[in-house]
Amino acid sequence: MNAVALSPFDLAIAALLIVALAGLSLRLQLGVERQLLASAARSTIQLLLIGLVLKVLFDNARLPWVVLMAGVMIAVAGREVMVRQKRRLIGWWGFGVGTLSMFVSSFTVTVMALALVIGTTPWYAPQYAIPLLGMILGNTMNGISLGLDRLTQDAAQKRQIIETRLALGESWQGAISDSRHEAIRVGLIPIINAMSAAGIVSLPGMMTGQILAGTPPVEAVKYQILVMFLIAGGTGFGTVVAVSLAARRLFDERHRLRLDRLRLAGK
Image 1 (cartoon, rainbow, N blue to C red):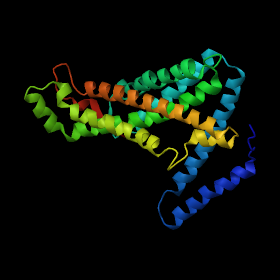
Image 2 (cartoon, rainbow, N blue to C red):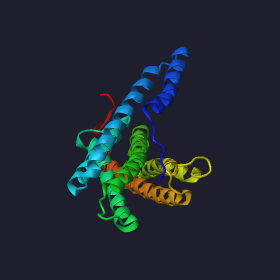
Image 3 (cartoon, one colour):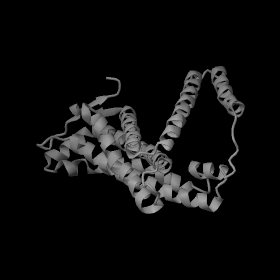
Image 4 (cartoon, rainbow, N blue to C red):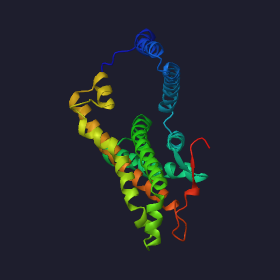
């Protein structure tokens, strides 16, 4: 592959776009210039650090190190799911539902792809395992975040409707079924939109990166199709598991709605 090496000067030219955007925000009094600059700096530092970590990991391709890296990624993603919700489950559940759901879906889908589809030797080769898990995990995280946020918001807004249905004899599953189905649908919208627009409206990031690195376009397309399907599977199964677990947690053993198990972000 004939990848074009980028110098620090090349990256500095691209960074001028962020500086210009921050200046425009300042002039228009949008109030986001500090956030832009801070997020750009944070992104640069994080990516440089992960580049160094991956270099060491690739040079020491041992299963325990790969598992440790995957565990850290899933734990951080679980925290991101928790903090993105306006109303979240209190206690361990706020972190555990998203983390467990992503482990069940993203980790399982990644292992299946490595062992049965890509067929690397060893199957946990970090140059395949870590990027693949990262792409699946990032999209699954977004789907689960949207689904859980929609479910908890719906439960709070439709409290009277849900409690009326419970009073009329419905089980907790039936009382919250509409909100649960809507939450799962909302969680799947991003990946459905991404698959629908891929190749026509946008060129996905993995495919673009491979082409820029010199991979033949047809081969890059094959990998992108594989990744899109894996992301869809991980997002779908993860969202279903997370929303189902959270929905069950909103009710006690006597089928009573327990909104006291939720708290607003920042409180």
